[in-house]
Amino acid sequence: MRVLDHARIAELPSPYFGKVRDCYDLVPDADHPLGRRILISSDRISAFDRILAAIPFKGQVLTQIARWWFDRTADICPNHVLAYPDPNAVIGQRLNILPVEIVVRGYLAGSTSTSILTQYKTGQRAMYGHVLPDGLRDNDALPQTLITPTSKAFDGDHDAPLTASEITAQGLLTVPQWDQVSAIALALFARGQKLALERGLILVDTKYEFGTDIAGNILIADEMHTPDSSRYWIASGYEAALANGSRPPSFDKDVIRSWVVARCDPYIDPIPEIPAQMISTTSQVYIDAYEAITNEVFLPDLTGSTPLDRLRTNLSPYFTR
Image (cartoon, rainbow, N blue to C red; front, side):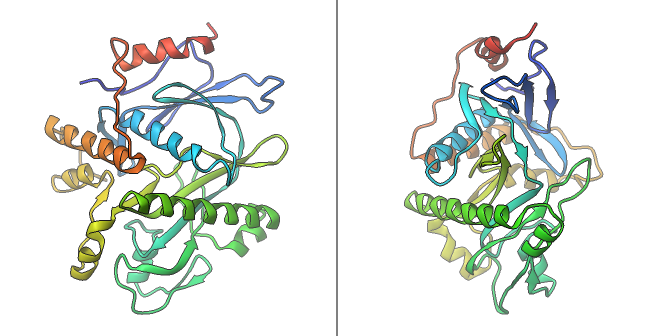
């Protein structure tokens, strides 16, 4: 199978290797005083703070879905993208990343400790500076779209819930920055929900990362509205799932997470070897998500003897040694 399990290229400068992305920082120049960053989406899939497997074409799918959304939201907010030298890679402006993760939610959903559904089911109604009414069911539409910001975790820390007043009081963002970021996030989410619904999908929630350029302008960084940063439900199955209390059909990596959880405690035990059929199934979930979101046929890039060879060729103009 053609997989990009890593993109470690010795000729590229200043590497940073994350769970899923392999990145390189280019030297600043007159046009890019903060520098540029090469962001390569590998085919690695992570969950439970661990790498589970490499999923064919996952990196290409995520890069191209984000590209599709960036192209359709540039009128709302500029983004960090400068070029796409490879199906798995983006050249982006380096930004001063704002220290708040902006999570926007349209439904009472989620499973993590910071999700509003998890907190709601423990009896909490006041969260993130909002007060939710009693009587909401799992996966109900919220009375209004909410921003539920969290601190950005570094060095093994965990995201922590924040309110708008805490963000400005702690100096994480100025009041004008918070006002601008929150307005942009709500506009992006509204655009995302509209375009998703036209394709038979519900954009349930998402997270945005913002940064500032050398002039202090706010730009979108990282990715946008991908299955790894967002939750999508299939609209045709939503009402039936809501009525019977089940989870709405969706496009996400739960297919492989559920397989792992059924066989071990993934936070403690070794991860069992994931069979080829499960890897193939997960790959198809990502491809299906691409085709549903973009309404375009996914065309895997099969140039080069391997994806890494193709990347090396396409990124060779950026080699420094």
